[in-house]
Length: 120
Image 1 (cartoon, one colour):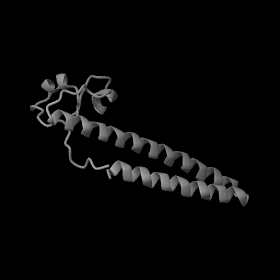
Image 2 (tube, one colour):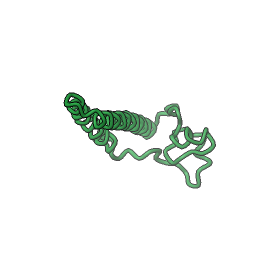
Image 3 (cartoon, helix red, strand yellow):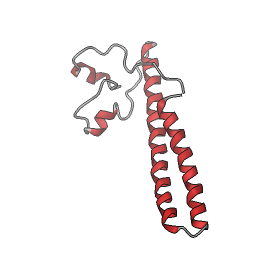
């Protein structure tokens, strides 16, 4: 289980508990706390979805690295790396899957993203 998956589960459990608390507060006429708890549900739900996306990206990067280590030439992921997406393609990080960008790094890229911690 990756850290992203653990955070996803934690945020999901928190959202469910806050939803139950908000419902209970609403039933007993405590509307202000119910609204605040409802806002917390939205925040934790978004966090769970974000961690799910990060986990999926990590799984894809590890699959890409595994295929590359077996001698295949897999196409780059879309986006090739998260830094490229954030910088609109101007910068690339050490996990970049676009082989043409590897020449721009200071040291040669031999193992692509590390295949450690890829148990799901």
